[in-house]
Image (cartoon, rainbow, N blue to C red; front, side, top):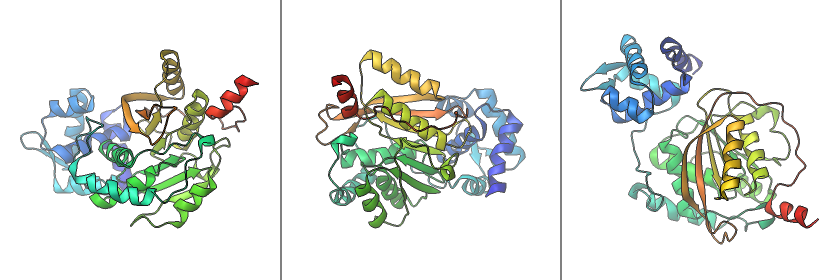
Length: 336
């Protein structure tokens, strides 16, 4: 695997791609799923300049990993190398331009997820828990897949009362794909037990009992390609969860962060953007009302999805946090 992964590094170095190995992975995945594809279409879809994509194509052709056939197309050797490098082998594509309708292929997963979710512990409002609907959980999984956050990826879920890890596993089974690993850090002992003991399908979820007020465990630092968070709906909660997520990411440009967060006032919206930018995350897409919740009066029943990419800059040392975190904490602080 290390030798195969070196291919991405070699290609990124040879073409001087600013997006690094993750950028090469994006290009290869797009060619695999849509090829043969004209080079201009590929550049437009990926947001990478045409000369750079052309340089990558040239390197792929040199290595006999791609050919020109009404556009660029991976050879059999290229397809094999991509699978070896990244675990990418699925050509299924979903339309995720709407948050209201799920693709027909995954609609049966909603009822399967709901059967599992009805057994989980009730929401603990003191932890700002508010369960996402079954449709939202599956929509999240589809969104992660479309944006290359599942196949061959190591994923970290920072808390998971919504059981998003379960939804990802169900979709992976349906598409016959595999994440490299899925890990959940969860403070709620009831959920730790539920996720650890129940059997959800042909995949494994590693569950670690951990309070995110404390630094990420040493053995998880820099180990992940993707983090997913639905943090407390306070700026303090957002900052803490994102800090922990970034600490867990491999320090490489292009790693991924997905954050669900309630819509705030314009002033708070600026604070959200500033927080993400300061921590080295670039917001690529914000989808309003992506997440729907059961009985979430605080959020008016919905929140946005924020898709980010990591700049690769390493954060400072972790420190324990003892300030206000949840909505209740802030209310008590103001009353005090």
